[in-house]
Image (tube, rainbow, N blue to C red; front, side, top):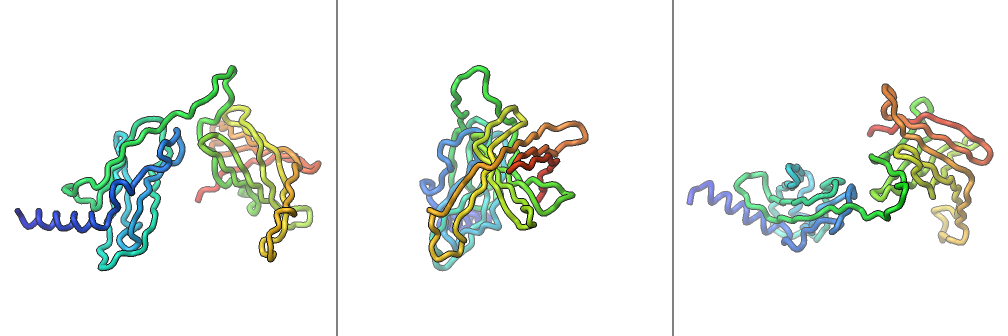
Length: 251
């Protein structure tokens, strides 16, 4: 056996001892739906696992996850690590886990999984649904300080939190819920105001939490040439109404 072969064998053996068994590595959720975020979940040793060495690549439906374990004299505390694979269309995939980037190192774990189409009730006409994910922090650059946190799930449900200033210039917030898509680019919902006890009160008494509808709001994500990336936010709250052009904040 060559010196290189011996070195590779020893490296692989050391890496294997630091990695979880195949049964401890799984895809989460186990049966994902289309465009639902999919993670590789690994039970790891807190000393051996080195997050900064993790890399993920994919080709032809096969994900390659590489990481280089630390060499530890003593085992660390057990941890659970999630590694994002992505939000995937329906299909069959495989994830392969390697302890090093060396091409001669064998796969430690290989997992096949299927992403399914989400079942839908057959109705006519078909309900409106968005073709992309509009999640993000939306704001108006000329009026920095207020904004809308828009969260869209893989089921197309929406929850939004709207942060603004009241008539006395005090910061306040609303939520926008109970909505529906009226087209592939338009969503509308009910604006709620929530109040309750102070967060730092000795006891957070749920009896004092109130949630009242105070208006309506809608978002139109329709794009036009030279106006890509903008949305129109229209609202009516407590007798006041307005329309704002907003854009998604780029982090």
